Image 1 (cartoon, one colour):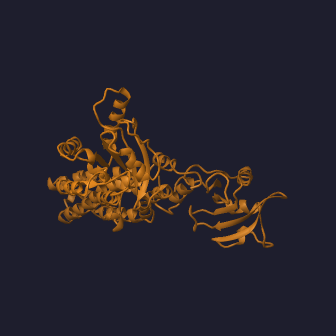
Image 2 (tube, helix red, strand yellow):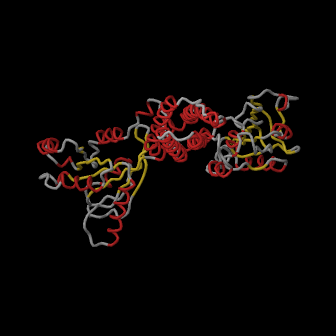
Length: 467
C-alpha cells in the first residue's frame, strides 16, 4: 500500500478522552467535511463567527445546538489541513464530562453524516497522509501505554523519529548501491561494473554493525516496555512473602510461620528508578507429598524460566554453618546458567555482629537483608538497577522494543549476510541483487515504505478508540 492510497475522506468521530464521568470530555472529528459539519451545529458566543472563517489552531467558545435545543456550552478547536494530527481537517469539541452530554453530541453528529472511528483510525490516517511513518505511529500506542520512565523514554524516542531516521539512513545508503547493481544488470552484455565491490563490502559491514546493535537492544527494550519479571525463590519460610509485601509496601501475600503457605505464584508491579519490575512470590521449594503444594512448586520452576532476574532467598539464621549455602546457590546456577541470580541472606536481624561479619567475609557477593525490619533493601534495589543495563537509555541510543521491528531487523541482517557471502564468492550481480532487495524490503517494512492492508489492520486494531 502506498502512503497516500486508500485514504477515506469521510468524517469520523470518537471520544478522545476515557469513557465515563469527568470534569471535561473531548470529542474528536476528522475528515474533509468536518468543519462544515461542526459549523452547522455550533453557535459561537461571538456574533457572526463561523468555524470556516477562523484560522487554524484556534479555540472558540460557544454552544452545540440541536435545532433550538442547547446541548452544552463548549470550546471548539479547529485544525485545518494539512496542519493537523491526521493531515485532514480536524475539530475537537471540549464539553462538560457528563456521560449524557458526551452521548448527545456524539449522536448528533453521527445522525448527520459522521461515523464512529475505528480503533486507531485517526493515527492510521496520519500515517496514510504522510504525517508520520509506521514505526512512529506504533510508538503513539506505546506512549499511551507507558507506565514507567523507561518505557516512556523508549516510546518518545521512537515517536520523535530517532529510530525511523536511523533506519531511513541505512536504507538510503543501501539503496544507492543497489541502484548501481541494478544498473549493471542493464549493461550485463558489456560486462561493466558500476558498484565498487570494496566500497560495498565496507558499507554492508557498517550497516550490519548498526542493525546488530539494534537487534541486541531488543533484549533490554522488550523487558523495559513490558516490565522486568523477577522471581523470588527459596525454601519454605525463608521470608519470600514478607519480602514481596515489603517491596510493595502492602500485605499482598499471606505471611505465616507454617511452611508451604504460598501454594501459587503471587505477582505485582512496582517502579524503581523509572523501571517497572514484576515481582513474583513463588511456592517454597522442598520435597513434599502434598499434591497441591507440588503443583505450586512446579509453577515456581516455570516462573524461574520466565524471569529475567531471580532473587534466591536464604534464611541466614539457619545457615550459619554455611555447609549448604554454597551448594544451594551452585545447584540453582547450574540448573539455570543463563539467568541472573542474586542471592539474598534474609533474617539478618537475628544474627550477632560477629556472625554478620563472618557471613560478609565468606559470602561477599550475597546481600544481607531483613525483609521483616526493612533493612538492607537499599543494597538490594541498587543491585537490581545495576543488573538492568539502562545506559543506552541515558545515552539516548535507539532501543528497539517492538517485536515486529525486531523480526524485520533480523531478516534484514540475514539478507545482508547473504549479500556479504555472495561478494566473498564473487557471485553474479543478478543473484546479489535478489539479496539486496530482500534487505531493503525488510528495512522498508519497519517504517511502512512497504506494507499491506493486513499488517496495518493488525497494528492499528491494538489502538484505543479516539486515537
